[in-house]
Amino acid sequence: MQLEQLLDINKIKQDSQNVIRDQYTDAYPHLISYFKEKTILTLEDFIRGAHMVYAWMPTILTVHSNDLDEVISLVNKAKNEGELQEDEIKTIASIVNNSVVGTSKLLHFISPEHFPIWDSRVYFYLTKKRGYNSRVNNAQQYLEYIALVNQIIKKDGFRTIHDTVNRRLGYDVTAIRAIEIIMFQSAKN
View 1 (tube, rainbow, N blue to C red):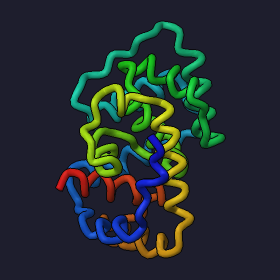
View 2: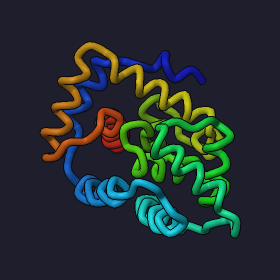
View 3: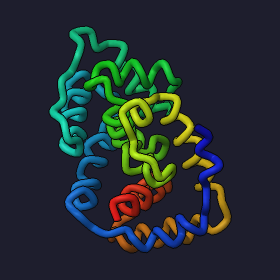
View 4: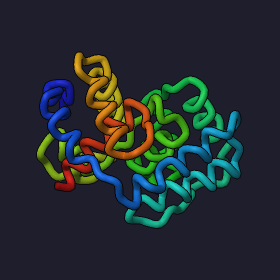
């Protein structure tokens, strides 16, 4: 699916009025600060962080590996470089419940300037289709979404949208978070 064709900056601007404070937005800055304080992520940081973000998931986390060295390397790459390839996202997902959604949340908290949260509500906002597992739990689809979010950030008028979200939340978020929270909360409505 080509997510770029779904871009409408005017709808996003209108939907920015749907952003409200709730238990997730109240907890958000505290989760962000945990990872921000870390320059290098350790196995312990990964385990703690994965369990923290799974508080935002409807399932309990199971870490599916005894050999986590590659994943620790990848989450540090995400933190320091702000970019991962499809196979790297799949590798992380294979460790955290085989979930691209859970991986996107973990990556977002590790590097909120580069990785938006991806889930079935965001998918619904973009496509008006229910996010069945095969549609949402897809690393390539997540990469397309990242590209789309980065296109939105470059649009004329986005700064106003970002300011609106920051004002409505009562604290500053990254541009990527501003777009994602608009989609997430608007799909809920």
